[in-house]
Image (cartoon, rainbow, N blue to C red; front, side, top):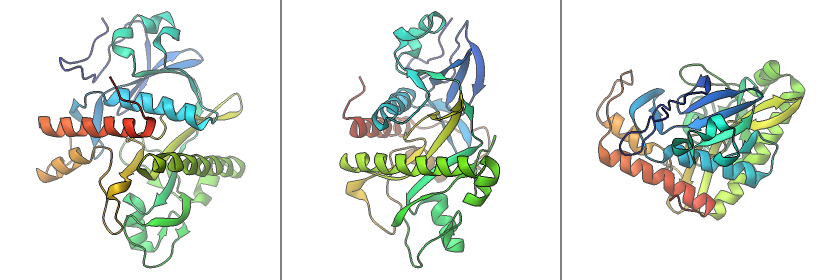
Length: 300
């Protein structure tokens, strides 16, 4: 048995006989293949740290293919081996009908216990911190800045990983205590370099990259970019044509989902409510549009 997709081809929980589960996240399932891992990106969606009971069609494929695009485009050391199902081990290929397009064979890395966040604009938790303190993760910013305003220069704002709930923003001194000075400085350098190059590409394609989160790991003493890269789930993408300082611009992510859940006064505790079909459809369209604009390709 190898099916977990509903009639409308939404995969929530894969059942992959013959593969050893390694870990399960909000969106991804990981399987142990010795010195390698298989990462399967489902169509699950979460909001306010709760996984919803419905999925978004093609979301997993968008995230997987977009990560593959960035891993190759940025040409930075990373954990990707292949997304080509025909080049994966036989135990994986037997499930090709549901894994094609949404699976990645990767090197097994030891993750660093810090999320590496780069911000180029004042938004989200950064905007809230600025309103309260005039700073973001230890970075003192000019007075009088407005929501969504571009920062004088991109900043590195690490966060600690949380098993449940929100990650906690930390300053660079705390990151150095956790990682060591040399590693923290290297991760900061790589994070800001990747952000700057990705933001340049995105802006040329009509998208502003407000902020993004990277994860890094270590394999044989080498630092690699791991997990996902520059997807709507790990990044705040804004359409350049609709950008305006002083308001929160529309984004290429689960904005429609969050807006709907806020509108029904859900208490943000499990179980999460079902989503209307139009919210699911519009969210799926946003994810596919982000993929099309950033890569120049259209999902079949």
